Image 1 (cartoon, one colour):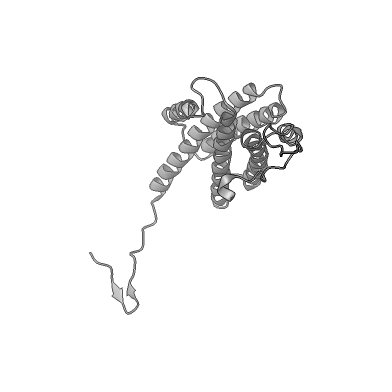
Image 2 (cartoon, rainbow, N blue to C red):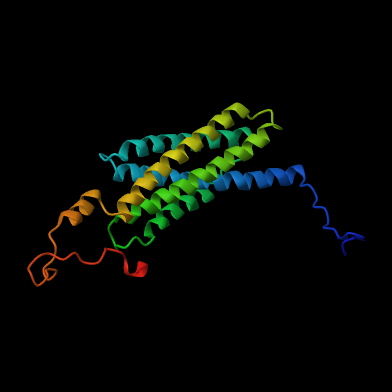
Length: 217
Protein backbone atom coordinates (compact mmCIF):
# COMPACT_ATOMS: atom_id res chain seq x y z
CA UNK A 1 0.00 0.00 0.00
CA UNK A 2 1.36 3.43 -0.93
CA UNK A 3 0.82 6.65 0.94
CA UNK A 4 -1.92 8.86 -0.48
CA UNK A 5 -0.39 11.75 -2.40
CA UNK A 6 -1.63 15.32 -2.27
CA UNK A 7 -0.46 18.48 -3.89
CA UNK A 8 1.91 19.05 -0.96
CA UNK A 9 3.67 15.72 -1.45
CA UNK A 10 3.42 12.32 0.28
CA UNK A 11 2.02 12.14 3.79
CA UNK A 12 3.06 9.62 6.41
CA UNK A 13 0.43 7.04 7.34
CA UNK A 14 -1.14 7.61 10.74
CA UNK A 15 0.00 5.20 13.45
CA UNK A 16 -2.71 3.28 15.22
CA UNK A 17 -3.23 3.92 18.90
CA UNK A 18 -2.30 0.80 20.90
CA UNK A 19 -5.10 -1.19 22.43
CA UNK A 20 -5.54 -1.19 26.23
CA UNK A 21 -3.86 -4.61 26.40
CA UNK A 22 -0.91 -3.35 24.36
CA UNK A 23 -0.58 -0.24 26.49
CA UNK A 24 -0.47 -2.33 29.66
CA UNK A 25 2.13 -4.68 28.14
CA UNK A 26 4.33 -1.76 27.08
CA UNK A 27 3.96 -0.14 30.48
CA UNK A 28 5.02 -3.41 32.15
CA UNK A 29 8.16 -3.59 30.00
CA UNK A 30 8.96 0.07 30.73
CA UNK A 31 8.51 -0.17 34.48
CA UNK A 32 10.43 -3.44 34.78
CA UNK A 33 13.32 -1.97 32.83
CA UNK A 34 13.43 0.90 35.30
CA UNK A 35 13.14 -1.50 38.24
CA UNK A 36 16.16 -3.39 36.91
CA UNK A 37 18.09 -0.15 36.55
CA UNK A 38 17.06 0.94 40.05
CA UNK A 39 18.34 -2.31 41.55
CA UNK A 40 21.70 -1.85 39.84
CA UNK A 41 21.78 1.76 41.01
CA UNK A 42 21.15 0.76 44.62
CA UNK A 43 24.04 -1.71 44.46
CA UNK A 44 26.32 0.91 42.93
CA UNK A 45 25.62 3.73 45.37
CA UNK A 46 25.82 1.44 48.41
CA UNK A 47 29.22 0.20 47.27
CA UNK A 48 30.38 3.77 46.70
CA UNK A 49 29.17 4.80 50.17
CA UNK A 50 31.17 1.95 51.72
CA UNK A 51 34.26 2.84 49.71
CA UNK A 52 34.14 6.50 50.79
CA UNK A 53 33.13 5.96 54.40
CA UNK A 54 35.08 8.38 56.58
CA UNK A 55 35.75 10.82 53.72
CA UNK A 56 33.93 14.08 52.91
CA UNK A 57 31.97 12.23 50.19
CA UNK A 58 30.94 9.42 52.53
CA UNK A 59 27.98 11.14 54.22
CA UNK A 60 26.25 12.47 51.07
CA UNK A 61 26.74 9.09 49.38
CA UNK A 62 25.24 7.29 52.38
CA UNK A 63 22.23 9.61 52.26
CA UNK A 64 21.88 9.03 48.53
CA UNK A 65 22.02 5.27 49.08
CA UNK A 66 19.09 5.46 51.49
CA UNK A 67 17.06 7.70 49.21
CA UNK A 68 17.67 5.65 46.08
CA UNK A 69 16.64 2.46 47.90
CA UNK A 70 13.44 4.25 49.00
CA UNK A 71 12.82 5.34 45.40
CA UNK A 72 13.05 1.72 44.28
CA UNK A 73 10.41 0.77 46.85
CA UNK A 74 8.23 3.64 45.61
CA UNK A 75 8.52 2.26 42.09
CA UNK A 76 7.45 -1.17 43.33
CA UNK A 77 4.41 0.42 44.98
CA UNK A 78 3.55 2.20 41.73
CA UNK A 79 3.84 -1.09 39.85
CA UNK A 80 1.48 -2.71 42.34
CA UNK A 81 -1.03 0.11 41.95
CA UNK A 82 -0.89 -0.31 38.17
CA UNK A 83 -1.17 -4.11 38.40
CA UNK A 84 2.26 -4.62 36.88
CA UNK A 85 4.14 -7.62 38.32
CA UNK A 86 7.88 -7.42 38.84
CA UNK A 87 9.87 -9.58 36.43
CA UNK A 88 12.72 -10.68 38.63
CA UNK A 89 14.76 -12.01 35.75
CA UNK A 90 15.13 -8.42 34.53
CA UNK A 91 16.11 -7.29 38.03
CA UNK A 92 18.84 -9.93 38.14
CA UNK A 93 20.13 -8.76 34.76
CA UNK A 94 20.24 -5.18 36.04
CA UNK A 95 22.30 -6.15 39.07
CA UNK A 96 24.65 -8.23 36.93
CA UNK A 97 25.09 -5.26 34.61
CA UNK A 98 26.15 -3.11 37.57
CA UNK A 99 28.75 -5.72 38.56
CA UNK A 100 29.98 -5.95 34.98
CA UNK A 101 30.43 -2.18 34.97
CA UNK A 102 33.12 -2.55 37.62
CA UNK A 103 35.39 -4.07 34.96
CA UNK A 104 35.49 -0.74 33.12
CA UNK A 105 39.09 0.30 32.51
CA UNK A 106 40.37 2.79 35.06
CA UNK A 107 44.10 2.68 34.42
CA UNK A 108 44.78 -0.09 36.94
CA UNK A 109 44.26 -3.82 36.70
CA UNK A 110 42.91 -4.89 40.08
CA UNK A 111 42.71 -1.84 42.35
CA UNK A 112 40.70 1.35 42.32
CA UNK A 113 42.17 4.51 40.86
CA UNK A 114 41.03 8.14 41.13
CA UNK A 115 39.36 7.61 37.76
CA UNK A 116 37.06 5.01 39.36
CA UNK A 117 35.31 7.76 41.32
CA UNK A 118 34.71 9.84 38.20
CA UNK A 119 33.33 6.93 36.18
CA UNK A 120 31.07 5.67 38.96
CA UNK A 121 29.65 9.11 39.69
CA UNK A 122 28.97 9.65 35.99
CA UNK A 123 27.13 6.31 35.84
CA UNK A 124 25.14 7.23 38.95
CA UNK A 125 24.23 10.63 37.48
CA UNK A 126 22.94 9.00 34.29
CA UNK A 127 20.86 6.56 36.32
CA UNK A 128 19.28 9.36 38.35
CA UNK A 129 18.49 11.34 35.21
CA UNK A 130 16.77 8.25 33.81
CA UNK A 131 14.78 7.94 37.03
CA UNK A 132 13.70 11.58 36.74
CA UNK A 133 12.39 10.82 33.25
CA UNK A 134 10.47 7.88 34.69
CA UNK A 135 8.74 10.10 37.26
CA UNK A 136 7.91 12.60 34.53
CA UNK A 137 6.29 9.87 32.44
CA UNK A 138 4.35 8.58 35.45
CA UNK A 139 3.24 12.13 36.20
CA UNK A 140 1.60 12.25 32.78
CA UNK A 141 -0.02 8.88 33.46
CA UNK A 142 -1.24 10.05 36.88
CA UNK A 143 -3.32 12.74 35.20
CA UNK A 144 -5.38 9.97 33.57
CA UNK A 145 -5.15 7.30 36.29
CA UNK A 146 -7.11 7.75 39.50
CA UNK A 147 -4.98 5.24 41.42
CA UNK A 148 -1.75 7.25 41.02
CA UNK A 149 -1.06 10.23 43.29
CA UNK A 150 0.28 13.03 41.10
CA UNK A 151 1.58 15.00 44.08
CA UNK A 152 3.58 11.98 45.28
CA UNK A 153 5.08 11.51 41.82
CA UNK A 154 5.99 15.21 41.72
CA UNK A 155 7.77 14.89 45.07
CA UNK A 156 9.78 11.94 43.74
CA UNK A 157 10.71 13.97 40.66
CA UNK A 158 11.86 16.91 42.80
CA UNK A 159 13.97 14.57 44.92
CA UNK A 160 15.57 13.03 41.83
CA UNK A 161 16.60 16.50 40.69
CA UNK A 162 18.16 17.22 44.08
CA UNK A 163 19.99 13.89 43.93
CA UNK A 164 21.33 14.73 40.47
CA UNK A 165 22.64 18.06 41.75
CA UNK A 166 24.41 16.35 44.67
CA UNK A 167 26.01 13.75 42.42
CA UNK A 168 27.10 16.41 39.94
CA UNK A 169 28.82 18.31 42.75
CA UNK A 170 30.63 15.14 43.86
CA UNK A 171 31.53 14.31 40.26
CA UNK A 172 33.01 17.76 39.71
CA UNK A 173 35.11 17.44 42.86
CA UNK A 174 36.31 13.99 41.80
CA UNK A 175 37.21 15.25 38.32
CA UNK A 176 39.22 18.15 39.77
CA UNK A 177 41.09 15.78 42.10
CA UNK A 178 41.85 13.43 39.23
CA UNK A 179 42.70 15.75 36.36
CA UNK A 180 44.01 19.01 37.85
CA UNK A 181 47.19 19.56 39.87
CA UNK A 182 46.87 20.10 43.59
CA UNK A 183 47.31 23.68 44.80
CA UNK A 184 50.27 22.70 47.00
CA UNK A 185 52.00 21.10 44.03
CA UNK A 186 51.56 24.25 41.95
CA UNK A 187 52.86 26.44 44.76
CA UNK A 188 55.87 24.16 45.25
CA UNK A 189 56.68 24.35 41.56
CA UNK A 190 56.54 28.16 41.69
CA UNK A 191 58.90 28.38 44.67
CA UNK A 192 61.33 25.64 43.61
CA UNK A 193 64.92 26.79 42.92
CA UNK A 194 65.90 27.28 39.31
CA UNK A 195 67.59 24.27 37.73
CA UNK A 196 71.32 24.36 37.12
CA UNK A 197 72.56 25.59 33.79
CA UNK A 198 70.35 28.68 33.60
CA UNK A 199 73.01 31.14 34.85
CA UNK A 200 74.83 33.55 32.56
CA UNK A 201 78.50 34.08 32.20
CA UNK A 202 78.47 36.45 35.17
CA UNK A 203 76.92 33.77 37.39
CA UNK A 204 73.59 35.55 37.71
CA UNK A 205 70.37 33.71 37.01
CA UNK A 206 68.86 34.27 33.59
CA UNK A 207 65.10 33.62 33.40
CA UNK A 208 64.24 30.90 30.97
CA UNK A 209 61.41 30.95 28.44
CA UNK A 210 57.88 31.18 29.76
CA UNK A 211 56.33 27.93 30.83
CA UNK A 212 53.94 27.65 27.91
CA UNK A 213 53.09 24.22 26.59
CA UNK A 214 54.86 23.35 23.36
CA UNK A 215 51.60 23.19 21.44
CA UNK A 216 50.97 26.82 22.46
CA UNK A 217 54.32 28.09 21.11
